[in-house]
Length: 145
Length: 250
Image 1 (cartoon, rainbow over the protein chains, first blue to last red):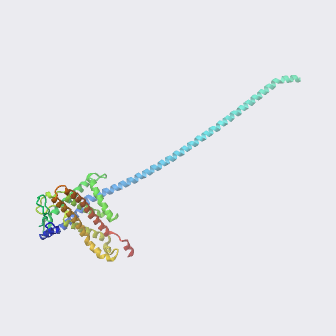
Image 2 (image 1 turned 60 degrees about the vertical axis):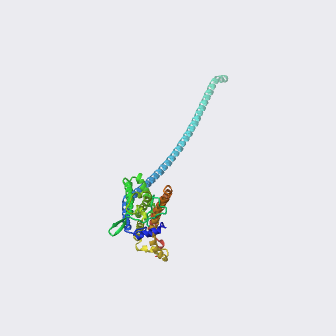
Image 3 (image 1 turned 45 degrees about the vertical axis):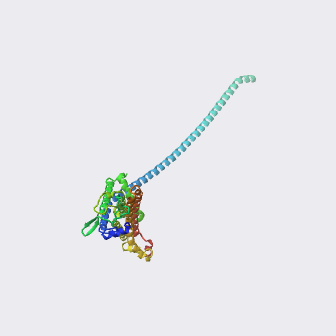
């Protein structure tokens, strides 16, 4: 039964060794470890922690910046769209107005022309009447005389 | 007697030693040389990795910086989860060093072929398979959480001992002893047991079969490092925890 751990430990302990042999290694290791903490703090945790924090803030500011720009661009696009729609409406109105004007002018012109034509026709009629009266007069005076 | 000789150790392939140390004399004190040597190797590796990682810190990390940033981020997460967003920052180096040192120590026991280096006595192994290392780390953790509690609350820290009810006092006092005890023995036992199991299996079946247990051992080593660091962070967080109802009552 050599290989039970307990026996081995007991045997070793008799000679000042063994598994649970606490000695000056303990404080030395503690001091060593504290030094390691100090060294790693200066060498590793501080610089890399700073790097991580800086990157975080960099990414965050960039993100908010980009988000701001995106919202600005979106509002600009919306504004342009509104202006475009407004302009379309205005141009439509201008076109309708122009068409209405043209229509009015056309009707007016037509009416004027018709009136003029009427006038001319009446004049021509009067002229005709007059001339025919003049030509007939001698005849009638002759009959009266 | 101290050799763990298996009955069928007629094969001269491997041999298992437990409780043998290479003693260095330092004044009146004895030191386990093999533990100190391997811990120096681990510490050296950590320092080399850190130097390589921070030689030229860039915004877009690459290579070593990337790897170590992952480690730093991971340990920060550990500390943040257990201690809380507000207080965790000063404790990151301690928790992170605990994790990295234990992790590298455990893995060095499994991955570095220490047995190739002959020592006059004992053999090189993971520093965490020596109880001195684990007790040292556990006691430092105890000191750390006492320091955290006292620096945060002053003498009001003793109020923790009667929370939430006064009869918890003896249990809380016992806890102060069981915390480092369980921390150190858990780590020590796991790592030593892992190395022993691998050793015994290598004795029995020298080929292939130990690989499975070695892989399991790697996994276990990582888990143990994680457990130690998480528990340390939890204890520190617990010590600094505010008891809201206490302020309301008094």
